Image 1 (spheres, helix red, strand yellow):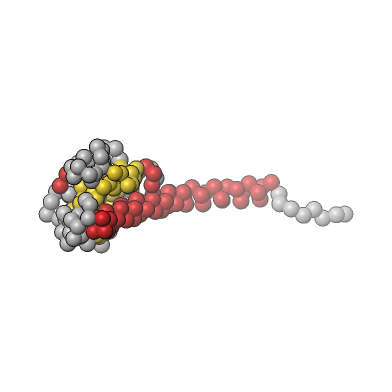
Image 2 (cartoon, one colour):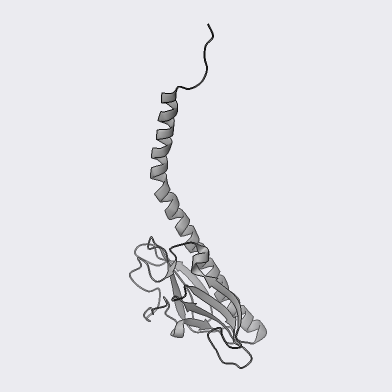
Length: 181
């Protein structure tokens, strides 16, 4: 008599059931990790665009601005046009970057999330999730600019602040439950 090799139907069903149970526990953690990763990507891009605005202003001796528009779910990096009038990225302003928050994943928005206070700022946060006047940062040809922060959050309440000191130094910090670091 020949001995059959393989698995019984009961064994296969038990393995499938165990994989399903493990997957049910792992999925929420994987989703939270992915959402945090997407928020970090948006934060890094905002940091990069603010740094680029500062460097381009110093290099070209022309005003570059980063404008947060939470209503449209985006921020713009633009060069103020030849007429010297800041037209919110319109008119003769030259838009260099138009970053849409949903491009970084769903659930990313402007705001403090679970953070209970703004970072290092006596100013209050506005409707666009910033402490900058008119929701924008710009720099002089010497690299100094207006101080403030843009705040980004996700559906899990994780929050990052990206902004500048009056000296032009660009900073990025994360809310860690009780403090910004």
